[in-house]
Image (cartoon, rainbow, N blue to C red):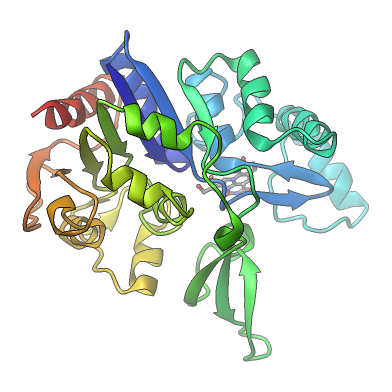
Length: 316
Ligand code: FO1
Protein backbone atom coordinates (compact mmCIF):
# COMPACT_ATOMS: atom_id res chain seq x y z
CA UNK A 1 0.00 0.00 0.00
CA UNK A 2 1.27 3.50 -0.83
CA UNK A 3 0.19 6.34 1.43
CA UNK A 4 0.83 10.06 0.93
CA UNK A 5 0.34 12.38 3.90
CA UNK A 6 0.24 16.18 3.65
CA UNK A 7 1.34 17.60 6.98
CA UNK A 8 2.73 20.50 8.95
CA UNK A 9 4.57 20.38 12.23
CA UNK A 10 3.65 19.06 15.64
CA UNK A 11 0.22 17.55 15.00
CA UNK A 12 1.27 16.29 11.60
CA UNK A 13 4.39 14.64 13.03
CA UNK A 14 2.39 12.83 15.71
CA UNK A 15 -0.19 11.70 13.17
CA UNK A 16 2.57 10.37 10.90
CA UNK A 17 3.92 8.32 13.80
CA UNK A 18 0.48 6.73 13.99
CA UNK A 19 0.41 6.06 10.25
CA UNK A 20 3.78 4.26 10.37
CA UNK A 21 2.48 2.14 13.25
CA UNK A 22 -0.88 1.43 11.59
CA UNK A 23 0.64 0.47 8.23
CA UNK A 24 4.06 -1.01 9.03
CA UNK A 25 4.63 -2.49 5.58
CA UNK A 26 3.34 0.44 3.58
CA UNK A 27 5.37 2.91 1.57
CA UNK A 28 4.64 6.29 3.18
CA UNK A 29 5.48 9.68 1.72
CA UNK A 30 5.19 12.79 3.85
CA UNK A 31 4.79 16.09 1.96
CA UNK A 32 5.69 18.76 4.50
CA UNK A 33 4.94 22.47 4.78
CA UNK A 34 8.00 24.71 4.39
CA UNK A 35 6.20 28.04 4.69
CA UNK A 36 7.28 28.26 8.34
CA UNK A 37 10.95 28.08 7.33
CA UNK A 38 13.09 30.99 8.41
CA UNK A 39 16.71 32.15 8.30
CA UNK A 40 17.91 33.30 11.72
CA UNK A 41 21.48 33.92 12.91
CA UNK A 42 22.58 32.90 9.43
CA UNK A 43 21.01 29.45 9.77
CA UNK A 44 18.21 28.04 7.62
CA UNK A 45 15.59 26.52 9.92
CA UNK A 46 12.79 24.22 8.69
CA UNK A 47 10.52 23.72 11.72
CA UNK A 48 7.95 21.36 10.21
CA UNK A 49 10.46 19.16 8.40
CA UNK A 50 12.49 18.94 11.62
CA UNK A 51 9.46 18.18 13.81
CA UNK A 52 8.55 15.28 11.54
CA UNK A 53 12.15 14.07 11.19
CA UNK A 54 12.85 14.21 14.94
CA UNK A 55 9.45 12.72 15.87
CA UNK A 56 9.72 9.75 13.50
CA UNK A 57 13.45 9.42 14.25
CA UNK A 58 12.77 9.36 18.00
CA UNK A 59 14.78 12.48 18.77
CA UNK A 60 11.91 14.85 19.46
CA UNK A 61 11.17 16.61 22.73
CA UNK A 62 7.72 15.14 23.35
CA UNK A 63 6.41 17.99 25.50
CA UNK A 64 7.28 20.76 23.07
CA UNK A 65 6.66 18.78 19.92
CA UNK A 66 9.58 20.62 18.33
CA UNK A 67 13.34 20.54 18.85
CA UNK A 68 15.40 17.84 20.45
CA UNK A 69 14.97 15.82 23.60
CA UNK A 70 17.68 16.50 26.26
CA UNK A 71 18.33 19.86 24.64
CA UNK A 72 20.61 22.55 26.06
CA UNK A 73 20.51 26.25 25.25
CA UNK A 74 24.10 27.47 25.58
CA UNK A 75 24.38 28.90 22.08
CA UNK A 76 21.10 30.73 22.58
CA UNK A 77 22.34 32.27 25.84
CA UNK A 78 25.63 33.30 24.30
CA UNK A 79 23.86 34.93 21.36
CA UNK A 80 21.66 36.83 23.82
CA UNK A 81 24.78 37.92 25.73
CA UNK A 82 25.94 39.58 22.53
CA UNK A 83 22.53 41.12 22.09
CA UNK A 84 22.26 39.23 18.82
CA UNK A 85 18.63 39.45 17.73
CA UNK A 86 16.27 37.71 17.66
CA UNK A 87 16.49 36.47 21.23
CA UNK A 88 12.86 35.26 21.20
CA UNK A 89 13.65 32.24 19.03
CA UNK A 90 14.47 29.02 20.90
CA UNK A 91 17.67 27.83 19.26
CA UNK A 92 18.77 24.56 20.89
CA UNK A 93 22.41 23.40 20.83
CA UNK A 94 21.62 19.98 19.36
CA UNK A 95 19.20 21.61 16.91
CA UNK A 96 21.93 24.00 15.76
CA UNK A 97 23.86 21.07 14.28
CA UNK A 98 20.89 20.26 12.03
CA UNK A 99 20.68 23.86 10.88
CA UNK A 100 24.46 24.04 10.28
CA UNK A 101 24.44 20.93 8.09
CA UNK A 102 21.35 22.11 6.23
CA UNK A 103 22.67 25.64 5.70
CA UNK A 104 26.02 24.39 4.48
CA UNK A 105 24.41 22.02 1.97
CA UNK A 106 21.96 24.66 0.74
CA UNK A 107 24.83 27.13 0.32
CA UNK A 108 26.70 24.47 -1.67
CA UNK A 109 23.72 24.40 -4.06
CA UNK A 110 21.89 21.26 -2.97
CA UNK A 111 18.09 21.61 -3.24
CA UNK A 112 16.10 21.35 -0.01
CA UNK A 113 14.72 17.96 -1.03
CA UNK A 114 18.25 16.52 -1.27
CA UNK A 115 19.31 18.22 1.96
CA UNK A 116 16.25 16.74 3.68
CA UNK A 117 17.09 13.26 2.37
CA UNK A 118 20.66 13.64 3.65
CA UNK A 119 19.50 14.68 7.14
CA UNK A 120 16.90 11.88 7.14
CA UNK A 121 19.69 9.43 6.40
CA UNK A 122 20.76 9.87 10.02
CA UNK A 123 17.29 9.88 11.53
CA UNK A 124 15.72 7.07 9.51
CA UNK A 125 12.12 8.41 9.85
CA UNK A 126 10.70 5.38 8.02
CA UNK A 127 8.87 7.58 5.52
CA UNK A 128 9.99 9.44 2.42
CA UNK A 129 10.30 12.98 3.76
CA UNK A 130 9.61 15.58 1.07
CA UNK A 131 9.43 19.35 1.40
CA UNK A 132 6.42 20.70 -0.46
CA UNK A 133 8.83 22.65 -2.70
CA UNK A 134 12.54 23.23 -3.27
CA UNK A 135 11.82 26.90 -3.84
CA UNK A 136 11.51 29.13 -0.78
CA UNK A 137 8.01 30.02 0.38
CA UNK A 138 7.73 32.23 3.45
CA UNK A 139 4.47 32.65 5.33
CA UNK A 140 4.09 36.21 6.52
CA UNK A 141 1.35 37.70 8.64
CA UNK A 142 -0.05 41.18 7.96
CA UNK A 143 -0.70 42.81 11.35
CA UNK A 144 -1.30 46.26 12.73
CA UNK A 145 1.69 47.24 14.83
CA UNK A 146 0.21 48.22 18.22
CA UNK A 147 3.09 50.63 18.84
CA UNK A 148 2.73 52.63 15.63
CA UNK A 149 -0.76 51.70 14.48
CA UNK A 150 0.80 50.99 11.11
CA UNK A 151 0.12 47.84 9.11
CA UNK A 152 3.09 45.66 8.33
CA UNK A 153 4.01 42.08 7.44
CA UNK A 154 5.99 40.01 9.90
CA UNK A 155 7.36 36.50 9.47
CA UNK A 156 5.07 33.75 10.69
CA UNK A 157 7.64 32.66 13.28
CA UNK A 158 7.73 36.13 14.80
CA UNK A 159 3.94 36.23 14.98
CA UNK A 160 3.75 32.67 16.32
CA UNK A 161 6.62 32.73 18.83
CA UNK A 162 7.33 36.35 19.77
CA UNK A 163 3.70 37.47 19.81
CA UNK A 164 2.06 34.10 20.54
CA UNK A 165 -0.33 34.88 17.68
CA UNK A 166 -1.84 37.58 19.92
CA UNK A 167 -1.52 40.31 17.26
CA UNK A 168 -4.66 40.35 15.12
CA UNK A 169 -3.77 39.08 11.69
CA UNK A 170 -5.41 40.77 8.72
CA UNK A 171 -4.19 38.15 6.26
CA UNK A 172 -1.50 35.59 5.57
CA UNK A 173 0.81 36.00 2.63
CA UNK A 174 2.91 33.11 1.35
CA UNK A 175 5.82 35.07 -0.11
CA UNK A 176 7.30 33.26 -3.13
CA UNK A 177 4.53 30.69 -3.53
CA UNK A 178 3.66 31.78 -7.08
CA UNK A 179 7.19 30.90 -8.23
CA UNK A 180 7.28 27.64 -6.28
CA UNK A 181 6.98 24.23 -7.87
CA UNK A 182 6.22 20.91 -6.17
CA UNK A 183 9.46 19.29 -5.01
CA UNK A 184 10.70 16.37 -7.13
CA UNK A 185 8.59 13.32 -6.37
CA UNK A 186 5.58 15.09 -4.89
CA UNK A 187 3.34 14.88 -7.96
CA UNK A 188 4.51 11.36 -8.81
CA UNK A 189 3.80 10.11 -5.29
CA UNK A 190 0.34 11.71 -5.29
CA UNK A 191 -0.45 10.11 -8.66
CA UNK A 192 0.62 6.66 -7.38
CA UNK A 193 -1.02 6.90 -3.96
CA UNK A 194 -3.52 4.31 -2.68
CA UNK A 195 -4.48 6.79 0.03
CA UNK A 196 -3.97 10.54 0.43
CA UNK A 197 -4.32 11.85 3.99
CA UNK A 198 -4.53 15.46 5.17
CA UNK A 199 -2.99 15.38 8.67
CA UNK A 200 -4.60 17.26 11.57
CA UNK A 201 -2.28 20.21 11.00
CA UNK A 202 -3.15 23.87 10.76
CA UNK A 203 -5.54 24.04 7.79
CA UNK A 204 -4.47 27.59 6.91
CA UNK A 205 -0.71 27.96 7.38
CA UNK A 206 0.31 24.30 7.15
CA UNK A 207 -2.03 22.25 4.94
CA UNK A 208 -3.18 25.43 3.19
CA UNK A 209 0.39 26.42 2.37
CA UNK A 210 1.20 22.99 0.95
CA UNK A 211 -1.95 23.07 -1.19
CA UNK A 212 -1.04 26.57 -2.34
CA UNK A 213 2.07 25.37 -4.19
CA UNK A 214 0.98 25.47 -7.84
CA UNK A 215 0.06 21.96 -8.97
CA UNK A 216 -0.34 20.27 -5.59
CA UNK A 217 -4.05 20.98 -5.04
CA UNK A 218 -4.88 19.68 -8.52
CA UNK A 219 -2.70 16.61 -7.98
CA UNK A 220 -4.55 15.80 -4.75
CA UNK A 221 -7.90 16.21 -6.51
CA UNK A 222 -6.71 14.04 -9.40
CA UNK A 223 -5.33 11.29 -7.14
CA UNK A 224 -6.68 7.86 -8.06
CA UNK A 225 -7.22 7.10 -4.37
CA UNK A 226 -9.60 8.48 -1.80
CA UNK A 227 -8.60 11.67 0.00
CA UNK A 228 -9.20 11.60 3.76
CA UNK A 229 -8.82 14.59 6.06
CA UNK A 230 -8.49 14.63 9.85
CA UNK A 231 -9.95 17.60 11.69
CA UNK A 232 -7.46 19.64 13.75
CA UNK A 233 -10.42 21.21 15.57
CA UNK A 234 -12.04 19.25 18.39
CA UNK A 235 -15.06 20.56 20.25
CA UNK A 236 -14.70 23.94 18.58
CA UNK A 237 -11.11 24.49 19.66
CA UNK A 238 -7.67 23.75 18.30
CA UNK A 239 -6.08 20.72 19.92
CA UNK A 240 -2.60 22.24 19.77
CA UNK A 241 -1.07 25.24 18.15
CA UNK A 242 -3.25 28.10 17.12
CA UNK A 243 -5.42 26.98 14.23
CA UNK A 244 -8.25 28.80 16.01
CA UNK A 245 -6.27 32.03 15.59
CA UNK A 246 -5.75 31.40 11.89
CA UNK A 247 -9.13 30.15 10.68
CA UNK A 248 -11.08 33.39 11.30
CA UNK A 249 -8.45 35.27 9.28
CA UNK A 250 -9.55 33.37 6.18
CA UNK A 251 -13.22 33.45 7.15
CA UNK A 252 -13.54 29.84 8.24
CA UNK A 253 -15.60 28.84 11.27
CA UNK A 254 -13.53 27.27 14.08
CA UNK A 255 -15.23 23.90 13.97
CA UNK A 256 -14.76 20.48 12.43
CA UNK A 257 -17.65 21.30 10.12
CA UNK A 258 -16.15 24.65 9.14
CA UNK A 259 -12.77 23.15 8.25
CA UNK A 260 -14.39 20.22 6.44
CA UNK A 261 -16.41 22.62 4.31
CA UNK A 262 -13.31 24.75 3.80
CA UNK A 263 -11.48 21.76 2.30
CA UNK A 264 -14.65 20.92 0.39
CA UNK A 265 -16.05 17.81 -1.17
CA UNK A 266 -13.97 16.37 -3.99
CA UNK A 267 -17.17 15.72 -5.94
CA UNK A 268 -17.89 19.44 -5.79
CA UNK A 269 -14.46 20.78 -6.76
CA UNK A 270 -12.93 20.42 -3.29
CA UNK A 271 -10.52 17.89 -1.84
CA UNK A 272 -12.26 15.48 0.50
CA UNK A 273 -13.83 12.08 0.02
CA UNK A 274 -13.90 11.50 3.77
CA UNK A 275 -13.53 13.69 6.87
CA UNK A 276 -12.71 12.43 10.37
CA UNK A 277 -14.17 14.44 13.25
CA UNK A 278 -13.93 13.85 16.99
CA UNK A 279 -16.49 11.61 18.62
CA UNK A 280 -19.37 13.86 19.57
CA UNK A 281 -18.59 16.63 17.12
CA UNK A 282 -21.30 17.16 14.53
CA UNK A 283 -20.21 18.05 11.04
CA UNK A 284 -22.47 18.34 8.06
CA UNK A 285 -20.17 18.41 5.05
CA UNK A 286 -22.27 17.75 1.94
CA UNK A 287 -20.79 15.18 -0.41
CA UNK A 288 -18.24 13.97 2.12
CA UNK A 289 -18.19 10.73 4.12
CA UNK A 290 -17.98 12.18 7.65
CA UNK A 291 -16.87 9.74 10.36
CA UNK A 292 -16.74 10.46 14.10
CA UNK A 293 -13.78 8.76 15.80
CA UNK A 294 -11.55 9.66 18.79
CA UNK A 295 -9.12 12.26 17.45
CA UNK A 296 -7.04 13.03 20.52
CA UNK A 297 -3.54 11.59 20.04
CA UNK A 298 -3.01 11.18 23.77
CA UNK A 299 -0.79 8.09 23.51
CA UNK A 300 0.66 5.80 20.83
CA UNK A 301 -2.34 3.47 20.91
CA UNK A 302 -4.81 6.31 20.38
CA UNK A 303 -2.65 7.75 17.61
CA UNK A 304 -2.37 4.40 15.84
CA UNK A 305 -6.13 3.88 16.14
CA UNK A 306 -6.74 7.31 14.60
CA UNK A 307 -4.39 6.54 11.71
CA UNK A 308 -6.09 3.18 11.23
CA UNK A 309 -9.48 4.91 11.08
CA UNK A 310 -8.13 7.29 8.42
CA UNK A 311 -6.78 4.38 6.37
CA UNK A 312 -10.09 2.51 6.73
CA UNK A 313 -11.87 5.58 5.38
CA UNK A 314 -9.41 5.65 2.48
CA UNK A 315 -10.11 2.04 1.64
CA UNK A 316 -13.91 2.37 1.84
N1 FO1 B 1 8.06 27.30 18.96
C1 FO1 B 1 7.91 28.14 20.03
O1 FO1 B 1 6.78 28.32 20.50
N2 FO1 B 1 8.98 28.76 20.59
C2 FO1 B 1 10.24 28.63 20.11
O2 FO1 B 1 11.19 29.22 20.65
C3 FO1 B 1 10.43 27.73 19.01
C4 FO1 B 1 11.71 27.49 18.48
C5 FO1 B 1 11.85 26.54 17.46
C6 FO1 B 1 13.11 26.19 16.98
C7 FO1 B 1 13.24 25.24 15.96
C8 FO1 B 1 12.12 24.63 15.43
O3 FO1 B 1 12.25 23.69 14.47
C9 FO1 B 1 10.84 24.96 15.90
C10 FO1 B 1 10.69 25.92 16.91
N3 FO1 B 1 9.44 26.25 17.40
C11 FO1 B 1 9.29 27.10 18.46
C12 FO1 B 1 8.22 25.63 16.86
C13 FO1 B 1 7.80 26.27 15.56
O4 FO1 B 1 7.65 27.63 15.66
C14 FO1 B 1 6.48 25.61 15.15
O5 FO1 B 1 6.58 24.25 15.40
C15 FO1 B 1 6.16 25.65 13.68
O6 FO1 B 1 6.67 26.70 13.01
C16 FO1 B 1 4.64 25.61 13.59
O7 FO1 B 1 4.28 24.41 13.01
